[in-house]
Length: 106
Image (cartoon, rainbow, N blue to C red; front, side):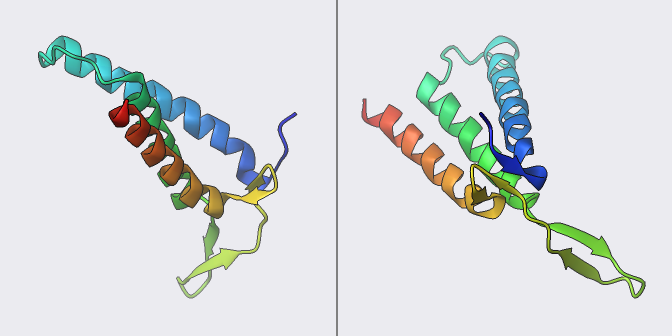
């Protein structure tokens, strides 16, 4: 069961879109630009998780523009598994770097 509030469910969408984008770019580099070796699966997953985390961090807060033209923050709770999206935006890149480091060590 997926537990979310607000825009928390978008983390799954961010992950899927990031995965499709990274895998598409990887295949494009191999086929069209002559890269002979694909990235390891750990590197690909790490990049996907890092991109998902950065995208989550950027879109974690909600804003609107008031009558004076100033950007004002809304107090809307956006979380995924009881963790705020802004915190996920910090956790996921750290996990991604760990996955890439794990792939380089092996």
